[in-house]
Length: 217
Image 1 (cartoon, rainbow, N blue to C red):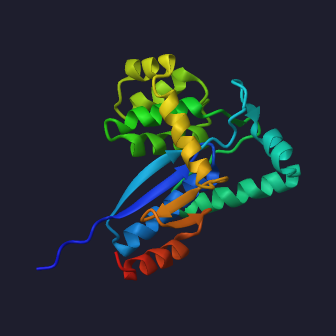
Image 2: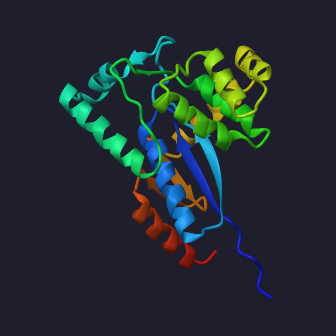
């Protein structure tokens, strides 16, 4: 009798401010479903904008400042991301007043949610809160509301953010991935060995999963 194979371990380093992170995850999820791949996903923190002030920054201004994009290029990118998101069932709600926010507290809340096995659910809810609903994820009350929306304790979520009890653990996790050479997200590591960066598309992810399935354990 053959032993059942272990689920494929997938580590995903990402930030909830990153549109390609939610696109890449949705594409990967579709590929996992299409290939019937048994898997376990582990999310890890990364801050795209660790020095972002509490009030955040207008998204269009931020993109222009950070990447030198013109308003036309920014609009073209939004249209493209919205179309790609729709292909994998995610609705982007870009608007001219949309803002980028610091996500250190969001990552702390995700760390807390992981203690009860709910990090994945909260991660998806935060993507939706930011990109679809345009909620302010640098506001502790908003973060607690999102946590409560998936059934977590709102008062405890606020307490976690108020006392910063997981700040050291989150910072250590961020630094770990930086030391591994991760400078941009999404960064997906399969079986702790194979790094794939960026949103690859469903077909490419299916090809990657097929190749991994043929490799010796």
